[in-house]
Image (cartoon, rainbow, N blue to C red; front, side):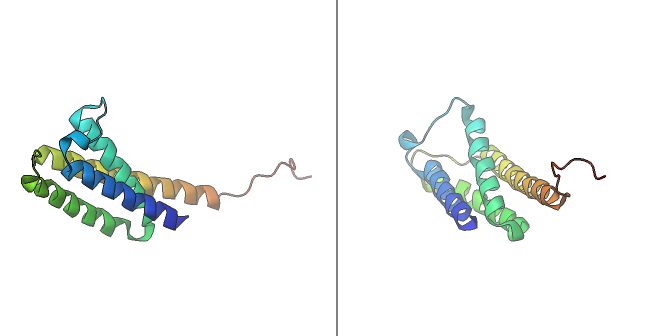
Length: 125
C-alpha cells in the first residue's frame, strides 16, 4: 500500500508543478479563488507525502517547504506566470497543515489498533 501512496504523492507533485509552471490556459480552475486553489492543492500534497513517508515526515516537510519556495521562484522565468510571497506563504502553510493531518491520522490509527478488541460475546460471567 505504501508504494501506491508514494506513487500518488509523486504524481500529485508532478501535476502541481505543471499547474504552477505550465501555460495558464492549461491550468485547472475551481471556484475557490486563487488562494483557495493553492490551499487545496498543497494541503493534498502535504497529506499525500505525509502518508507516503511517515518515518521521515519532518524532513519531508522541510524539503517540501524549500521546494515550494523554489517552485515559486521558478515562476520568474515561466511566461505568463508571476511569483508572489503570498502564494509561497499559502502553499507552504497549507502543505505543513497537510503533513500535520497525516500525523494526526497516523496517531488516530495507532491508538485505534492499540485499543483492546471489543467482542460481541457480552459481559464475562
